[in-house]
Image 1: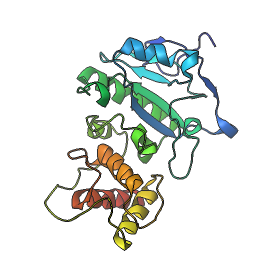
Image 2: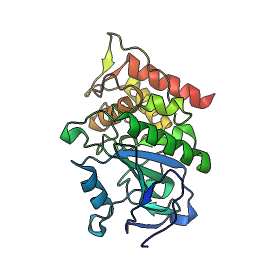
Image 3: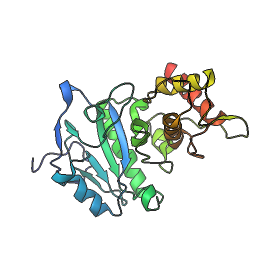
Image 4: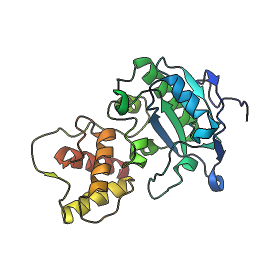
Length: 252
């Protein structure tokens, strides 16, 4: 595929990637998945996403100045999620539309996302969820679906601004206060309840009753998205209560 028509008027140009295939079993995209590029420059990121040898791609790339480039038609499966899961589904590429946001990421200093870029991401996300009727709780971070491998788009991404525009699930996190917390090495029914709540929310986690490395990874991912003021992988009152309130929102 050397060219195609953009799916949205917000895409200022097309830069076709060869890295895509058919969505499995006729699955329609019902997840919007946000990433950062994690590379030193936008040019490096675009080059990699369009290079056949890389075997990675995304539907969209959003530059620091707010320019939007489409690389893969939304009808096709782009290769951006990797080994991942959400609510038991493991072929997240078939289930999702992927947006890469130009930012060097944690490895290269992790700067703030520029305002023009965030405005463009908000507009693009709004357009996609409206056209595809994607539920707020299905607007996810790469770290949500792959918590032991990924940390993007990270704690600096303004999920609250996205939600204010009607996209994604969000509430003001419960205030951080001193008090007891669950740490790696803890075990018992209280850990099982935490793991059950995280699994019910959608994370790929087993209910073992042991606060192991995987549990800490999942708690960290939850904090990056929903309680970004402190990301430490420790289940304090703020983290647990924010999770409880989000689950209550979903049940309402």
